[in-house]
Image (cartoon, rainbow, N blue to C red; front, side):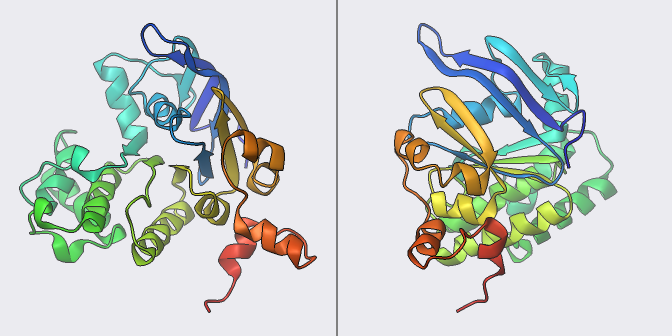
Length: 269
């Protein structure tokens, strides 16, 4: 449901790295409670930059990022406020994991918020349960598999109890079982009201999970309903992506184009 003040909004945001052209130009985007949004684009299209802008880690040259209806601030207090609402999970888990144990790593964020020991413990247990890593709590993160480490980095973000969760290429490097496990977690979080934003070039993942798609091409973002945006052949080709399989199969069979809800509702084969 659209509200007057989104949890996260980008209003005419433009960004360029020093001495370079705009990476992103005049971006308009709004994220509501419980939204599932896919950011799509080829490698180098600006997806990771956009995610960092949304998380408050980068400051736009023009335009404004709104966090819970208030303009983002980029001093220490502003960044702490952003982290209390929004958490970004990077593509490479080793860029975020540094605890001596899984439990210690997941505890890091809440501990630095000055919470009570009881609240920290409750958050950590909840986050590990959501990420399905409770059995790994006392393990050394560096001794875990790549997929397990990705779940540890996810749990670290969840322990901050964000209302918006940003994930940069979350299924990269995962096998099908690992991807399915991640999607189960994200679906549960979304049902609890967390807004989920996936940055990916996997069009089938995006089509199956998201309601809204935002396609990046030439520094410009075009967003709308997933079923509409991701069946726009011209836009998808311009972004150097491929059409997802679901609408292609639907058309070949002469059926109405499947939506994300239709895909998720299909019985297991």
